[in-house]
Length: 247
Image (cartoon, rainbow, N blue to C red; front, side, top):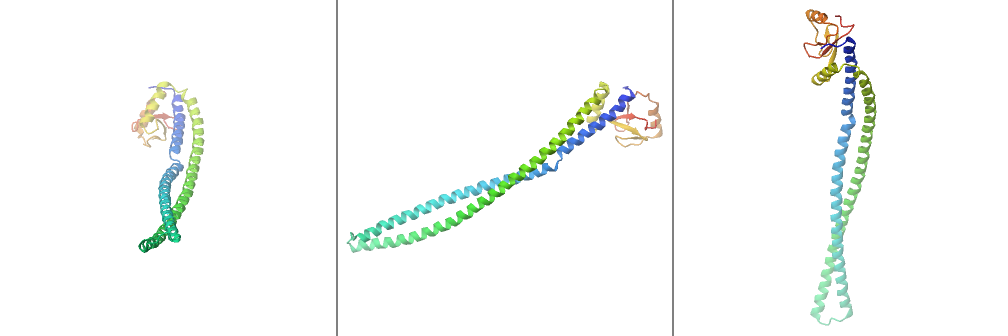
């Protein structure tokens, strides 16, 4: 393949632009905010699960308290009825009177036991409510932390994307004047060679693979016509000759 020396030198400009685009893309992928967001999102998800579990436990305890309070009310109501029967004097049978008095005593003991249960449940419910409140505050803080990290990432994205857009416009201006066949070869080699398709020959060295040429190899390169597209024997990249190449 042949191409005007000026067009080959433009490949170096294009390579520098493409390397800049690669750097911007790498920077975009490697922002520290990505790790922050991953951690914040994991923490947020874990806290959300804890809040759901704590709220479920609080709901269960609330229902348990309601049931216990209803049991107390039933015992209190029955005790009141029995006491009314005792106070009315309507029961004349000594045996019935004894049985009723015994039941009143049993109900009083039952009421005391149930009230102890209510107190114990209320303590657990207070503890559950405290945990829900605490976890809710932590979840809210986690939401803010995640949102702030996402905002920083988006701001960095906007800055990088603006730079990349400007560099892409510069690339279009350079690429449009490079012959199509030369540009196609450069593009193919860039894909094969880790992003570098053209490299300068500088002081006996290929700046693509850093291999230094023997004098005989340099003489062979020097013998090539100025418009010949020379390739590095080691890495296969387009080897661009400039005034500093020494050939």
